[in-house]
Image (cartoon, rainbow, N blue to C red):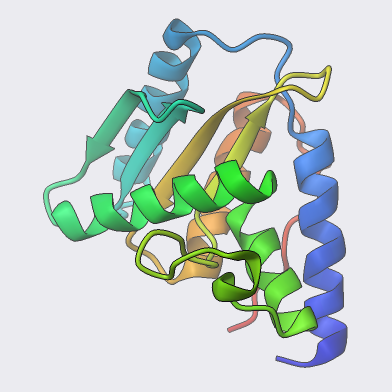
Length: 168
């Protein structure tokens, strides 16, 4: 991927983080959003896992389709920690790392506990307060991010939020 492509992805992920915000977010909201995403996985015939956690790590929603498992849960754990620590989408963290040449260790983060890869997204209120983290796993990491963003755009009724371009 070229530096120009990485720069474009960085700008788009910053916009997504800024625009895709919630007026409120409760455990009930997590249940409804999580079910919406699980149903979308089946509608799109995607074998994936989804989890929503509060910042203290408490899982308030999790679902794994039949062909996913503990490995996907482990990836979601690492994505959760990354979003919580860096306070931006895990794809945004990945692209910033690629642009700056800064792996997790530069930030004092263990690659066993953190991963700079798409599939984690901060759930923020319109005030900017970070309240939870949404994660998915099992697709290539940019496609994980794309699934999250498409789902949130529909859920929040914000179709004009930009998408990361398909790099296939």
